[in-house]
Image (cartoon, rainbow, N blue to C red; front, top):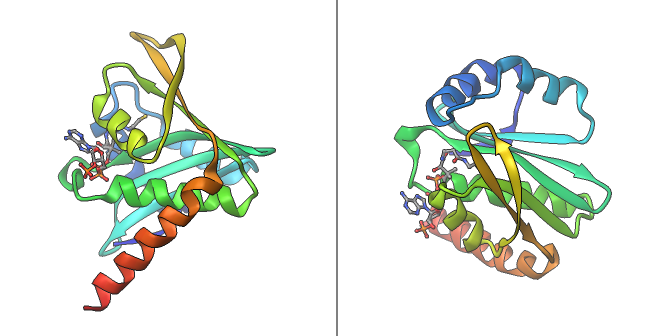
Length: 164
Ligand SMILES: CC(C)(COP(=O)(O)OP(=O)(O)OC[C@H]1O[C@@H](n2cnc3c(N)ncnc32)[C@H](O)[C@@H]1OP(=O)(O)O)[C@@H](O)C(=O)NCCC(=O)NCCS
């Protein structure tokens, strides 16, 4: 698997995954405008043999980053693709001097909450009726520098496993 910046050529496959995993999917146009027009946005895709298997993005505003989307193709879930994409988003944020990260997640989405908790995100509030049918839990990761060392260690282990 490789992770690279999302390009227009990826949007068709991203849109197909989006429809599979979300009840109210973003349109392909929404991704195109994020890539082409939103200077605050950074989006990445995970590719397996040139096929998009997952994607995620953030908006960076001053020293805060907001995770706007993170999804993995159902066939590739539970294989650490989401973890790798979230790591990439955190690296991108760190490279821009970001100190704190936030996101919204459905209260019913325990799987995504588990993933975010693994990285130290904590529940910090509620956005009422954020989704048409459900409230959102607001999560924050307060000090990105603290997990930087932890991520470096994981990355070193991953590289040495790949070399074996
Ligand atoms: C949330 C999502 C991105 C996770 O991606 P993934 O590649 O399957 O996740 P990973 O394999 O990297 O797993 C990371 C952690 O997530 C949690 N997790 C993943 N799948 C899980 C499952 N089926 N049940 C419980 N926890 C789960 C675990 O804590 C896991 O850590 P572990 O492997 O140490 O147990 C994926 O399930 C998805 O695309 N869901 C639909 C879209 C979505 O809900 N996005 C989040 C919007 S806020």
